[in-house]
Amino acid sequence: MSEPTPRSSSDDTGSPLARHGWASWRTGVASAVAGNPVVQRATTYREVEIVALAAHDRDHATAFVASTLGPLAADNAQAARLRETLRAYLHDGSRAPRTAHRLNTHRNTILHRVARAEELLGHPLEEHRLELALALELAHWLGVRPASRHERP
Image (cartoon, rainbow, N blue to C red; front, top):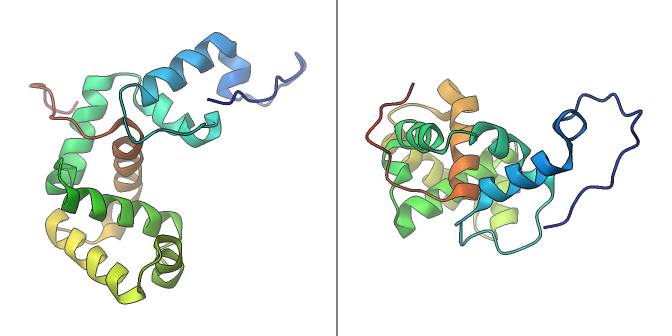
């Protein structure tokens, strides 16, 4: 993984790196992506910052992904394709043509996948956009795993 450029001690941006230091940064990133076979390239802290913060408690993060994504949290190719499409679609501001270009597919394919995902979720994406986006990021970087016995807090 590539490390960010060190900041001067006068940095008062309030970033997690500035507040917690290099050791915390390394530990957070390593735990955020540990064991995920999808992450095979250098990653910047900025790419996994929210995941590192949200996954501080791995059991609760896993339960959150399972409860938020429901059937989309399944560990199979169809669910993975829908998750990655939704992740890109939300990242692209819900613009199907842009997502289609990014994923090298047709706009109608994107719209069909989004409609299928909404059907599986049981609600429109916009109803729980923030929770959905976070769950998709966690699933992307941490992978999907069966939820623990504990319910979501």
